Structures are given as C-alpha cells and as structure tokens.
Length: 454
Image (cartoon, rainbow, N blue to C red):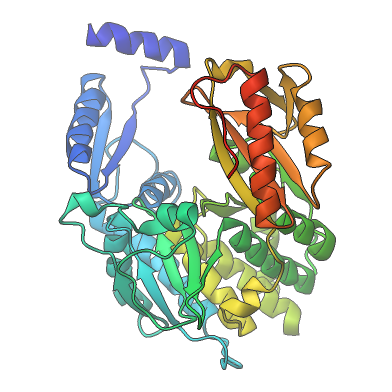
C-alpha cells in the first residue's frame, strides 16, 4: 500500500524515481518532532532515498545545509556525499560570524549604539542556536539570554517569542531589562524576529518586520548608490504591511514596492525579480535575495584594484552583507545580526530607528462564515471581487475615516474571513474594522455572533 501511494505522489509531482535522492532532515525541540523525524527517515528509506539526519537545528539552518550541499561547501549534491553535522554547523556559524565581525570593524562613533541585546529565545531551538553561535562572535556583541529553557516543552512560545510579542503588542514575560534596551525576540524555530523596547514610562514599543525591511532596504540602497554599481533594488510586501511603511519606502526612499498575496512563497518569488530583493512580513519573517547578476557584479568590483575610496568600501560591505544574509529563507539570527550591523554603522539606537516613520493605527478582526470560498479577492488580496457589491460597500465605509484603508481575505485553513483596517487613530481603526466586519457578516454568509464594536 505504501509503495502504491508513493508511486501516485511521484507521478503527480513528475518525480524521476530512477535518480538518486538525498533528503536532509532536521527537527526542533518538541516531543512530536522526534517521532516525525523517524517517520520521515523511514519514508525516505522505504522509497530508496538517502536520508541524512542533522538532528536538532533551526529551520533556516536546514535550508542553508541544503544550499551548502548543492554548492561547494558541503559536497557536490550527490547521494551519500554529505558533510557531517559538525561540518555543516561549522560552515553556518562561520558564515554568519566572520561576515558580522568584518562588518563591525568600522567603529567611527558609538555614543548611541551599544553592542548589547536582550535575547528572547521563545524557549525554542533558536535559543540553542544562539548559544552555539556566541563563541564564534567573540567580543563583538554582548547577549543576555531570556526564555531559553528547552527542557520544558510546555514553555515553547508560551508568553514569549516573536509571535507572542508581535501579535499581543506587549513584552515577553521573563525579560527584565532597563529602559531602551534592545529586546530581540525570535520564534520557536528561529525564522522570525522582531525588536522591541520599553521607554522610561514603561510603554511598550515594537519594531516589526516592516521596520526591519525599511531599515535594511535604506541601508542597502545607500551602499548600492555609493558603489556606483547598476543594480536595481526593490521591496516586496503583502497587504498587511503598514501603509505608513509603504509610503516611506516609495516616497522617501524612492525604492520600488511590490505587493503580493500573503505567504512567503509569493514574497520570495517576487523578490527574485530584482537584483536585490528585500522582503519581510510584519511578523518578522523575511530575508534579502541577491540575483546572480548582483553577486557577479559585486565580486568583479571587489576584485577591481583600481576602485578606491567610498566606492571600494561600499562594494566590500555589500559582499560581506551577502555572506551575512541567509538568502534561502527567513533566518531570525542572520536578520538580527544584519540589523545590528546597520544600527552600529549609523550609530543609531532604537529611537532613531523608530523615528523613520509613524505607523498608522491598525486592527485585525475575524468573521466566522459558513463557507470561506464565498470570499474571492484580486490585486494581491486588496480587492474583493465576490460577493458582488461587497468591495463597493467597504469603499464607502473607508471614505468616512482619515488616512484609512481596509481589506478582507478568506482564511487558508478555516471558514473565517480576516478583516484588516488602518486609520489615523486607533479609535478610527477599531470602528472601521467593526463596520467592515458587519458588512462581511451580512453579505458573505456570516454565522454565529455578529461582529461587535471594539
């Protein structure tokens, strides 16, 4: 039965089963992960593949291992010719640490930037990775660890980590630090990262994926312009990106912005259309991708001994940024190190970073419906085309508020419609979301309690 089902999968996916296949497998700290890992190994073996178990590691590390194996770092891509777990880890940690230390060498002034962070590890595998990486970083940065208990799996992502901090807009429990300390929160498998801090009055301030994207894009644009290289740079967002960040990118930075449907696969695919593509979701999942053209131009310029002064320094920094970034997927640790490089290079604290623009107030709302397929969207999920007339009603409501927008989209897994609204004030954003939610309930087959005013 198993072979029959696997044959169906192979036929559907057009897999050449006669070619040797190597499958890299890793797991996180949850108890279920070990059983799933064993099942994956058995499944690959049953179909004649070559499973390689790399044990407990972060999701971004596993992506990097696959990339390394298919390049010159971890083998030649052939079955059975794989670097050991220790060799792969060494390559990953050296890649990040060496480029970070090289980029941190330029210290002209540092009265606002302090090389110290409060690391919220979500009690997940990211905490283990960060502790393993720390010796490679030397004395370049001091890291105080919080929420790093992986022995008790009930603590994983519980009241801590990037998802909790971003969704609840409040600090993680267990993080005690002085005002304006940089708190870095990663999620359980270390592919998302957000920054936050508390001011002198104890008010919580979040610097999410939108903030990271604008910081990274502005820095890379400066380097590209200073290098003189003919490279096009763009940012990719989803409809959930705060409208204020989009305005800042397009109107102040003058960087092209593309909007795609929700999902990393859409963001990554669109980013590949640029020489340098930056994408981050608001939840902190994102990275920077460099085209082969960009890599080749930067390498050639770096080898050009006639290049002098600021141009040469910018080219060399671009080449080190390529090494620091894990372009295969969002990597919380890699992204965090890049943010630290930029803040140090600009001599910025969190206040300077946050002052780039002011977020519009926003509100998320869920409406339960009988069938989520009743909602159909277009224009990267920003416009509703079915039920007919719903978008027109949303537009009428939006016009009643200042600097407002709202869109609806079906959930990918549940019979829910997700409502997002933005406005100049939180009160207006709340009212807008509630009114749009009621219209969705009435026109898209709402069930259960009607949406109430927030």
